Image (cartoon, rainbow, N blue to C red):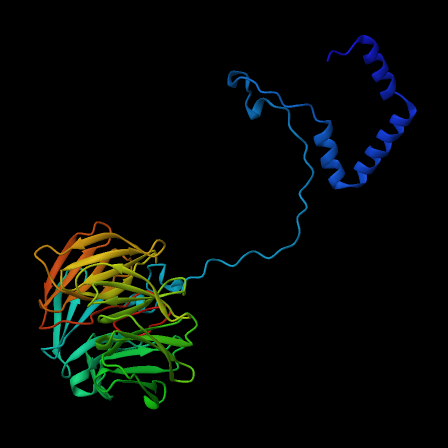
Length: 412
């Protein structure tokens, strides 16, 4: 319908009438005192937006400046930074005075009853000496003041001086130590007595006296890791397909989850939510929710999935596939395998270690009397170093971290 000139005159007169002017005056008075009214008024009175051709658009610099009101900033606390269990290991720098020690890789040879010492700068064995029978792992002390060789066959720990790299002559009696761990607070040591299906809580600060023995009623208890707060641990029972939870504070068995196969090494995820457990029988890695006590995912990696190592940037998890001579790389964010590095000519990579910079992954070759060094940058083999028979839980020392949880060098 068209609007005649007469109708337009009548509309203009109506808009200029006293009642309408009063109504508009009240509306804008309310808008002054109401922020919502201001927004509504600006939007209601703004000119309509018309579409224009892209060639007619001008840049922001050509436009007049807009005067905006200052934002309504309220004093609020900033969100905490992302939690990372391994925050103290991210720097790639060994703290002093340990920084003054020459780097060494200590390799226990289980069949030979010896330790080989490698200079990682030259990839050469520079020392070799006898220890007790069946040494399995070499664990740094919680405060990194000493190294302990787990002489399972001799029921003792051989103490290595970190300055000389050689045994001090001191040994510590302990029943069948297959593995040695320290609680995150350093108040307790844990002797993993695989032969007797138990773990022993001991006081390393007071003569290693026994605090309590906790039975693990499934065969093959051997590897473990702690929760983020250190209140409990998860331990694999290799020959039963079970992963058990133990209350560290009260020192008692607290639950279990059956994953089947042959569960071996255990690592907590950087965010502290899940435990990753290699499974040599199932050829991959179980992801376990320790609260629900169930396996939430299984990640195939390769035959004989065995050892675990968290990358220096904590974004990846390295997995040794001992029966196929390869290393799989799992991305923590997606929980998928992103790469597989194969050892030329094959091999049997077992326990793993990183150099401080995180550029080299060291692996003992359990069935090949060889230590392998892989580049984490290219995935290529850097060196094969001959050592003694059945080399097992090697440790690269000194390394990055505030303290050691034992095993073959797990740091936080």
